Length: 221
Image (cartoon, rainbow, N blue to C red; front, top):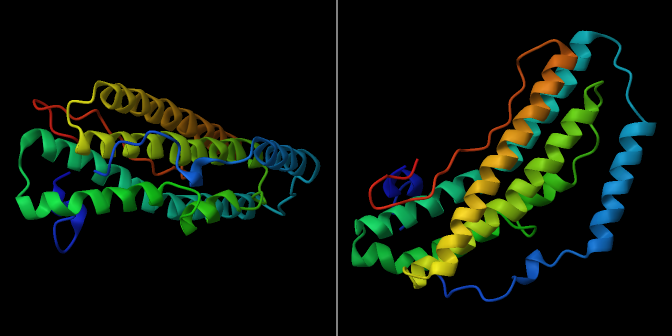
């Protein structure tokens, strides 16, 4: 993806290296555990009973569509951050564009954090009224990790590399989070495949972009 494409009207051409987790990543462990237990209980004890296969499928499709809507902002931000890193390696940005990158990368990090409205919406979704609620619920848990851990970590690594291009720790972090992004994307797709099988359809899909570690020899995609 070129920088111009990611930017829309005006090039969306890092910030200082992050030395500690930002405040919006410090989620209380007990709160997260409590939410997980509540969700598990809701899925197990309150499974819906759709009146027909068509209604069952429609409910699942509507729910997954809402999930994909909530994923869109972080997906774009992630691709933009990787494009900026590729542009940095290629030396393809003007001085003016380079000056605006730190602010844009900061915005990209926010888009994949709990303070972004789309992420708040994603984590507030109610259990879908479908017999495939269990695999779909697992998909939601996985994509939430994909956004708030994997994607956010990758963007922050790019921020560090923008400020310090040769930072070996940040380079390792970017490789690490890129691998996690691929793993969790595959897990989410497996959960969706299970939901498809339960509903006897192939209509469900989750929109998580594929990213690769940028290098001077291989453009980012």
